[in-house]
Amino acid sequence: MTQELGITVRKDKKPSEWYTQVVKKAELAKYAEVKGCMIIKPYGMKLWESIKEEFNEKIEDTGVENAYFPLFIRESTLAKEEDIVEGFDPEVAWVTHGGDEELEEKIAVRPTSESVIAPYMADEIRSHRDLPFRVNQWANVVRWEATDTRPFLRTREFLWQEGHTAHATEESADEETMLRLDQYREIIEDHLAIPSILGYKPEHDKFPGAKYTTTIETLMPDGKSIQSGTSHQLGQHFAEAFEIEFEDEDSNTQTCWTTSWGLSTRTIGALIMAHGDNDGLRLPPSIAPVQTVIVPIYQEDNREKVMEYAEKVSEKLEQKGLRVELDDRDHRTPGYKFNEWELKGVPLRIEVGPNEVEDETVTTVRRDNSEKEMGINREEFIEEAEERLEEIQKGLYTELEKYLKENIREAESKQEILATIGKNRGYVKTRWCGKEKCEDEIKEEVSAEIVVLPFREDSKPASIQASDKHIDGECAVCGENAERWAYFAKNY
Ligand SMILES: [Zn+2]
Image 1 (cartoon, helix red, strand yellow):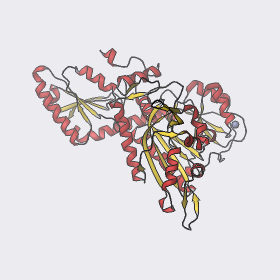
Image 2: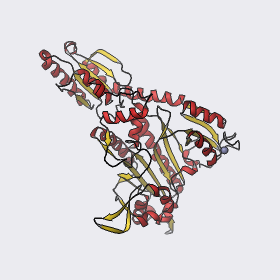
Image 3: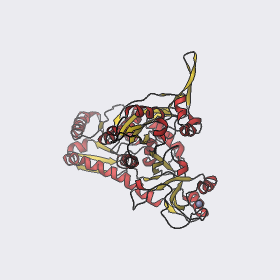
Image 4: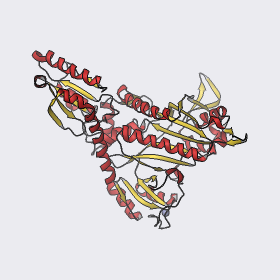
């Protein structure tokens, strides 16, 4: 029984198989018939909906409204922005037929919606009074990737939100870009309990056509980095191509500055990998669909008494606003239930049996550190339940924070970068001249790249450009003058 239900490989030995088993056995998702597509099951969907709810609240509080744009884009529209097409063309899925008839112009399934939303903004924006103009959509997008696909981490169709804004000034667009990145940080760190590193993408790796791209990176236990959200300052490039203009206070026509920013179901992949262990998922209470599960332990002669007691505990916790599940399935043993809820990552398990009923107590087991506590007074427990969940949330974050700190290592030469990546993975912090060829030299040998150029701690992020020189010393690869710190890592 346990064999079949539980995870049969160790996370550190076979991370890839471990991941697939967790996704499947915790009932998050399954493969669909078309390669690279997935069925997100209700338990997995609840995670995404929780992220959606949290982020919606943040963006609505800061002036963004939700809308919906079409799945299909005309080829000529997509082609209008040449840079985008260059960046996405190999990955676009095309519709060539409508029913039996071949279409005169083929239609793209959106890989992103810049080229649809930009004309919309051009149409809606008239005057400086319309700015900043902000719109977001929750949608699916398709990128026909040929490489290995994995549920949540890399799928051809995935869910995301894409926010698009237009501004009167460069400063306003800079601020917007950073505000959204910071809101992603709040989601990733506070909601998902994963520490992160914020910064720019290198110039050659930014969103095609953007002024700059910012990223939030998280380090996975296998030492690889995941890009968990990006926010782009698009400059005036898109606004010029799509004529997104406004009339200023003196009735002069001006070109807008635009931004776009996106967070996808990939974050769920990061969540699974960051916190999961050999027994399955470990969910932070903030996002867990079930925060605490009550498992009653009874024999036939005391079933009624135990169940009555368990129901009372359940009701009281629900009244406190907790998401509670009382597992009253008669056909499953307590042992089976323990394993199943551990697999599904429920942060706190409550056990009640005849002893607990007698003493008016509960027994609890934390999912994050397996700590078992017996004989907790029932009323006290109910009173403190929220604090206990907060402790678990903090516990999960702190564990990863320690791991992250230990896995940023400095390197001062090419050999040292290669050796450090080879031996430890993680982030290798190094001085960099800003040239792509120095990154290529590393990439060729260990398939690690510059995943982030961390923000300077002593200045406002928005005021720095990827090309700004702000450190002394020499590039670890070529020995020329360094411009800034760069983090090399293997990535997903
Ligand atoms: Zn260099």
